Image 1 (cartoon, helix red, strand yellow):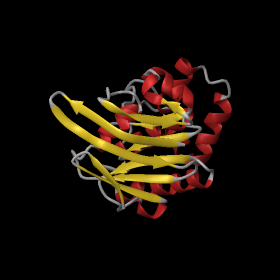
Image 2 (cartoon, one colour):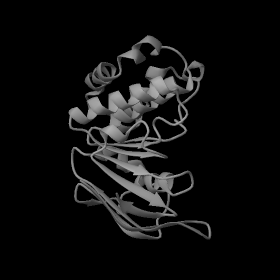
Image 3 (spheres, helix red, strand yellow):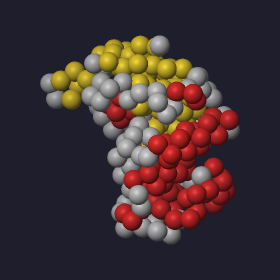
Length: 214
């Protein structure tokens, strides 16, 4: 489904990714594990077209993503959850989940939203609350819900359990396990395996921009 091969990315004069390679088979849940600054977020942002790559290829469903503009990659069924959530503060949690609808014209969004609430039922409690009034963990759930609105083929999640209470981190892992059971392909970046290790089919480590499979 996804193959990243010999990816090189610079930020200014600094080399961040060095011939980075990894792959995901359809239906797998794969972890990209490394300390802060190792290159995890850069890998994910390059995949989503948010960073310019120096060289290398990113293939998704036999398409070369590096030739597809960032704004069109969401149309391919890839849902992205950034580490910092990036919710619109004055919109309700449900409105944040629905923001992709307005730009992507998702035809079956009502069914998709109902499915999201089935996967994450606790979000219905605060569906009408402004996202700025939510806790950090609740905002993570909303950001995950927004990624699910798009990601009918693959989810790309940047540190989904980072900075949340242990009970909620466990709950997020349970949600991801349910999604895995539904056949969703998932790529997770985390600093360690504490919360997601049990749900991963494969683990890739990244250190100083170099990726290796454990």
